[in-house]
Image (cartoon, rainbow, N blue to C red; front, side):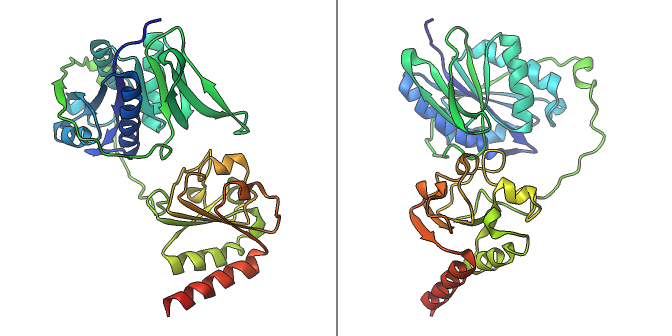
Amino acid sequence: MKRTGSVMVFVEQQEGKINDVSFELLSKASKLAEDLDEKVSAFIIGDRVEHLLDEISEYGADKIYYCEDEELKYYKTKPYFKVGKKIIRKENPQIILYGATKIGRDLAPRLASYLYTGLTADCTELKIGEENMLYQIRPAFGGNIRATIISPDYLPQMATVREGVMQKKKNKKDSEKIKVDVKLEESEVNDVRIIDRSKKVKKINLKDKEIIISGGMGLGSKEGFDMIFEFADMLNAEVGATRAAVDAGFVEKERQIGQTGTTVRPKLYFAIGISGAIQHRAGMEDSFKIVAVNTDPDAPIFDVADYKIVGDYKEVVPNLMNAYEDLKK
């Protein structure tokens, strides 16, 4: 099969703010398109989104399709699907990328079914392989292996990508901007009626922190995290945790890092009392510097750590805190 056409990104926005994962995907699309000697295209849907096009251009889109309508202010499946399929048919890309968000996970499979093509969900890596095929890489079998999935017989190749696994990188382009008009029928916009919206403010923001101190089952209890929170306050850091620690009730779920939690890449990551299961490493192994503390010298976490401390966290962490205080004097 001859593969031609752009690498397209669905740019997700809510209330006039673009989701960070869209910028991550545009940055990755630029690299994929370069390897294919193709262009990057993007599409955005909403109410009054034209002012966002320059922001999309900053991240490397050669061509941007946009559709505006007051009925598109909030995401609803049918109208977004109708607009999406018109834009895709017009552009005819060879690759389409979506964020693995609630919206992306709803829209992408519907468009894949309409286009009679495949879709790989929750990818953590993308690259161009043999015969210019998109290699879609994602964890499988509970995160114990990484599967590479290809779509050799159908186009476009489609994937949803987890938030935080790709790096944002600006690559300003003089984008071509194309407005798309779609007539929305009453049955398409009124089958679901939004009565009210309430927004839950996230109090814990792991993705933007430069320092994260994470704890695992090795801390033993909820009280074991008290020292971790004290250390985090000292360093102006955020506290993370493994899934096992969250499931045990040591900390709230919003702090979970790993395959089924948040993916992070801070400048400094402390893994304290964490054995290093592949599911957790998938969410933090791209951190710039990793410090691991564990009583087991053979703990898998040491395989990805830059600094390895074998010892009991109850002794090691106070020593780290004292050392930091001494440095401040």
